[in-house]
Image: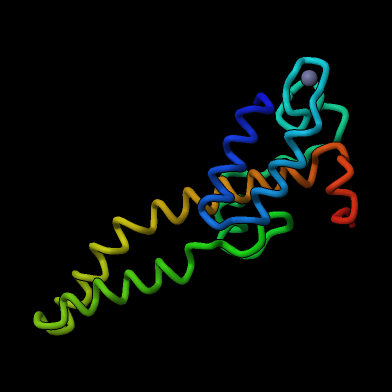
Length: 141
Ligand SMILES: [Zn+2]
């Protein structure tokens, strides 16, 4: 990934209110390798740093919770609320109506939520494995 793409991504996250993610992305964008890429996103320059391979499922599961660099999943409350809204919309149909309403809402929202969880986990892992930049040093364990 090129630094300007990374900064665009950071601007987008900042506009969405994800200040912590935006700050991490801006930090990462400053660390450019000799290929002109963001070092954490360059296959060549990431290689010397041991990167733990994680399965996609593991990323999705971990991404639903709280992660270093990216914090809590911002969509958790929203997804729960929308599923309850779906259940409420089906109220007149009794229990079956509630389940159908909740199911329709879940079918629409949960995939987006899980894709978000996956990309958050990947981002968190990349930032955790990125060579140090001045802004990230205090986050190392
Ligand atoms: Zn490189």
